[in-house]
Image (cartoon, rainbow, N blue to C red; front, top):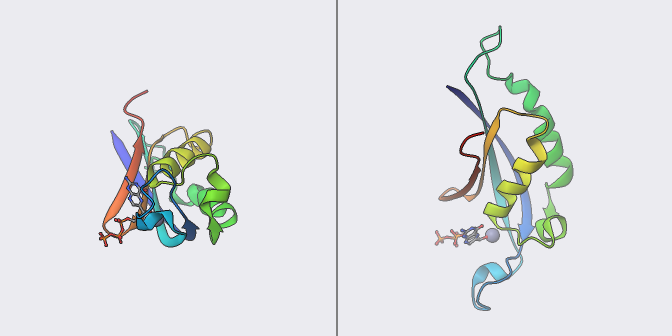
Length: 121
Ligand SMILES: Nc1nc2c(c(=O)[nH]1)N=C([C@H](O)[C@H](O)COP(=O)(O)OP(=O)(O)OP(=O)(O)O)CN2
Ligand SMILES: [Zn+2]
């Protein structure tokens, strides 16, 4: 099995619900998000690629136009804009265009990340 990944970044704000009132993440704050998409295939195309990284440019375009410098609470409502929910949302958006997509990772800080991954199809 071959696997490839590509990273994209954007800046956005959010506040998290369903936390104790004293939790700092209930307040509006921002992150420099990093999104990593993972694609896999048992076979390579004639170029020797799972998929040309260049084909993933539409992911960049989506992130730039829909997520960058936005409030994720507006975009993801009624979902809580956690990294986990954002990873699943992006998987569902990009899967139709990229059937080899099997995971999306969302990192809010250099020390944390959440992954939505489909085990096997
Ligand atoms: N499982 C999750 N936990 C948390 C999420 C999340 O999306 N999923 N999000 C947050 C906050 O939005 C934010 O990411 C804060 O994270 P945290 O690691 O607490 O950030 P800090 O910089 O404050 O961490 P330090 O403890 O200072 O390293 C919270 N949890
Ligand atoms: Zn946060």
